Image (cartoon, rainbow, N blue to C red; front, side, top):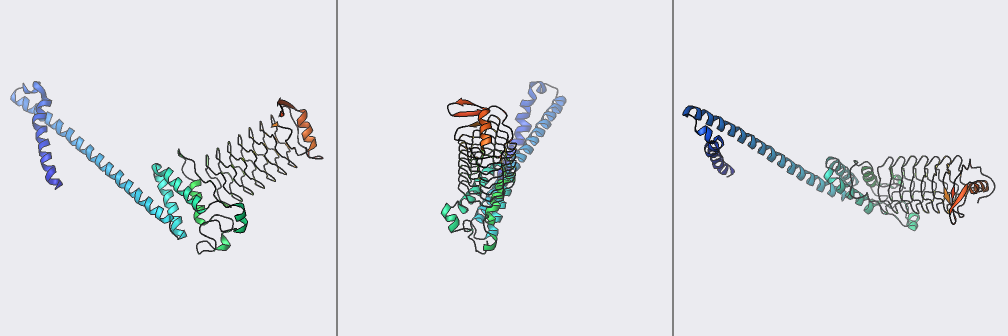
Length: 371
């Protein structure tokens, strides 16, 4: 049927090109030429028009082919996406993992689908690894992830205090996703990610408020400008982690390892670093109001311009720590009376009840009492 319609159209187009259009293109100058010269000129005009028509037809065919290719490719992406989503809902662990990595391939191949895949995987983690209430953690320990402990997919003796295999796979894909502009942050709020392996993860701007990351492996992870308010990171490994300008209000990092970590400009109001290892960590311009560093190790830490109003540093180690321009208040609890006295002498009151260190404090020496 299509061929029957195309043939008459082609005939009409050729007649128009070789007849009226050719005479119009030739103009009166050619038409006034002698017969032989006029015929030669008209043939040249017709040849030019045919070449132009051929080029246009070829270009149209190319555009048509490209459009069909893109439509077919989009259709294939849709089919693959649908299949991957179906795999995520499977009861079989291997099929869920296959769906996760299928989505990763789609995300890497299609920038257009990047945000959708990120949101799907983050939602998968939130739905299948929700944070537990404190009382449930001890009462139902080890049964906080999908699939339940003791099932065929996740034997009890291999799944204690770490994410289920499919949850870890989804986290791994999110952690290594391509660096692209994202309209929304990765949303992992109120998730239970205890023992998760997120070493080197790219989670800048991510939302992890209320997330449980106790015992997690976060070495070298990037959480710049991320939101981790009330997050639990007790005993977590955060060596070389980057948390510049991150929000960690009320976060728990007790016994965590944060050597060489960067927390410059971070909001750490009420955060707990008790017994944490923070040697050579950077807290420049950080807000540490009422933060707890009891028995923490801050040897060589950088606290330039940090706000330590009401902070507790009982029995903390501050050998060679840089306290230049640190702001403190009378409620700040220093690790020793000696250090407290030297800080007072080298400070000036910037406003009522608020003091700033203006001179070299010198090395901290653990001596009698805490002030």
